[in-house]
Image 1 (cartoon, one colour):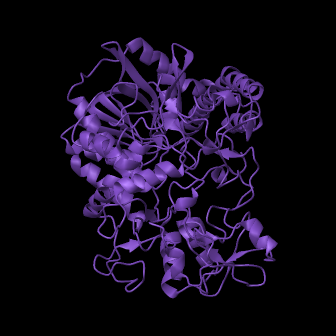
Image 2 (cartoon, rainbow, N blue to C red):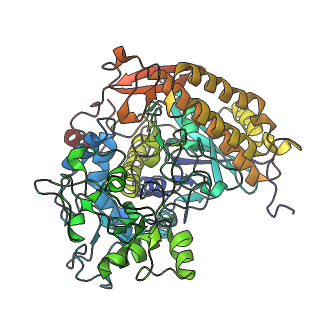
Image 3 (spheres, rainbow, N blue to C red):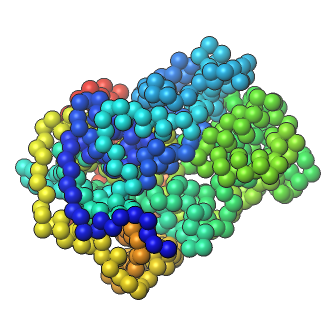
Length: 639
């Protein structure tokens, strides 16, 4: 079939602005809005269409850590330190303090622009999770009320409307490829980006005074199946970590990239869709669970006390200030653990029989309706494939149970080598301005290490956007090197010139298999070095052999190149950490225990003049979070 769009591969255009935002998800949209509200000219590049793009583009069901909402009993400082301690110190106190301090502000912004955050029609009036004065709906911890249930399907259209009203120039269907840098007073500074249209192959040079990278965390690194690519990861298929790859190529420093957890969602076609099986986790929390005989599975609190009512599942244990649930949770520390069913092994020991089922029929009516009708109905991963499809095929939560698989809430059992950058993963190293080691290059959302969910994306996006706007006041609009731009343009478009060659899926599958084999659950130098050699051989021997018939396939080929860069970054980070670290889900068979104390730190890796440079920062490098937040919230302070 003939490609329906104009061929513009021979066009080289140029645009200028004060602040350039790369990525049109929640973080990128808020960054663009914040910069535009500072009076700056703003351009936003988005690979898809900003109105529905990003991990939450088609919706989400909850907004976590809104610590300043009128019903919350937890302070931003308390929540930030709980999140920090929950990850054994390997967490981002800066990002979480911004999230907990400004998440409620950003949610109110979205409400002003047309997003729905309250039960305005009284659909859940009188429910224990609803505040009847404000109409706000709470999730998980009904006592402390720091997480809100929201109508996330309304958010991205509202944010897109706000950007257009502010005059933000949206470049939809434009893939960010290369971060442009220049030398400024002995430092490397960001001065723009090269982008390519995913339909016409038109290449554009975007010059800017400051750049915000707000793209998704990496995916399709360990898990990929060419036959069922849409099931390969929890996040959108096109979200592969392009920002990480772009930053790595430009010399940006990263930390915690050695952290990868065994797969939780989506196993390249082996699993069921996330939250499409019965469970009691996040979206389905705290659904009643029964075994094959219909016997209820007991819930227990932090101290192991069995809970007798549904309402108790949503309350802290006696003497417990609050508990963490949803969002960043990976391996929660005992002090903060919330009510949950007994461990799977204990249930089997007690005689409960598989399979298990989620039983909404026995739940109070308002709990059943809010889990199935609102949470499942608003979450991006479940709105159409689960809520719509199951309903159309006759599923009725008042009458039917939904079978659970895996360990009781996951969609399948995962192999140890099937890893994901999930649960507060690695990302860019940054300061309180959310500025990286590259001058005038700011990061937001999933570009941060130990990133969180929707509230984190919006709060850090707004913070990065306004700090980028302040940086633009001090920066010049620097010219791009024309010869370098032309060379990059030819490299970007090269796969379109290949008439015969490899399909991008073949290379993606090979990379994923290599990462499973050489960077799986247990690591050592021999494996990692062989993996690094193999990944680099794919770049020299396979990447240039990919043939593309149109700009769509060209985008897929570029994504595979980004996955190769991210894989190299991960392998180098793993080589840098010599000692096993349980808090990072990092295990070495050749662990050097003599370095344990020295390596209790953020280890950083970056590229400089073609070589990998490592560094370290103390786990408390953020300093006092209250002081840091107050000093930086109203201005750009470079230290």
